[in-house]
Image (cartoon, rainbow, N blue to C red; front, side):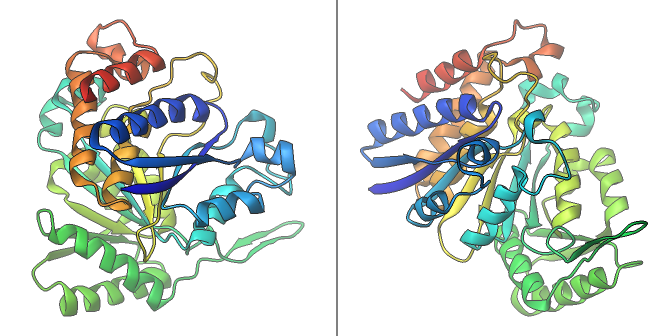
Length: 354
């Protein structure tokens, strides 16, 4: 098949991990006989420096013309001033809106070889395999904002339609897994959460009666992700809660450097990125973990291009590299293994693919 992939390396370690991921895409194309055309564009701080915008118009045009988007990371100390009118993270919010991406999928699975990398006891991690489905374009991040001399306001708004579509996405995912759906809200306090719970109940009852639906307050969910993480299958939640819970859940896998993500809309086009940030403290040192970005490539192959066999091959190659103890610094510490460089980790995946 022929597909066009927009590549947005971004800032910090973004270009380093994306370079390894694009090498994996090239290897997949060669092994399986596909033509994958890569088109690079600017986003984030580097885009601000060159164009004055965190998401230049030509970047969005390239992304709209692509079958999928691969992104590294945005941000860094150079652009950290919260009072600045243009900031790197605005590029992320704009591209999600611009491409109509409302569902963020973040799978969390624990490799048995990395049990020692997590701060949790190994017995708590056995069998952990969950997916958080985070609503991506509504809620407090996108509501009206007011700043006055002695007060500030951030408005959280959700509509029935926004809740319905994200619950449907989560329901379809749960139906193909263990048929357990946990909806996370704060319905004891927030009116938006009461709407969320009512709509979730209605959609699941009407369209997914085969699923076991449970509701959980966000503070309880935060606790149980640490206390009994293996009990979760698919978690669906609103924007800010999902942002916080997925960073917490990354510790189950040992590091943010291990977790990929997919941002999807109504069609097949999606945006794929590691959940970690730009890590400016290690940028340029060649030590960043590329596995989350490479696993994001697997999600890209599966969800946007429909290439399940190729996606599974990439995931197996990452697993093989870990089995061979090719471990970057963020996951090597507890194992006693000498840390692998970014290039060494990428090469190990390529070797397994070959």
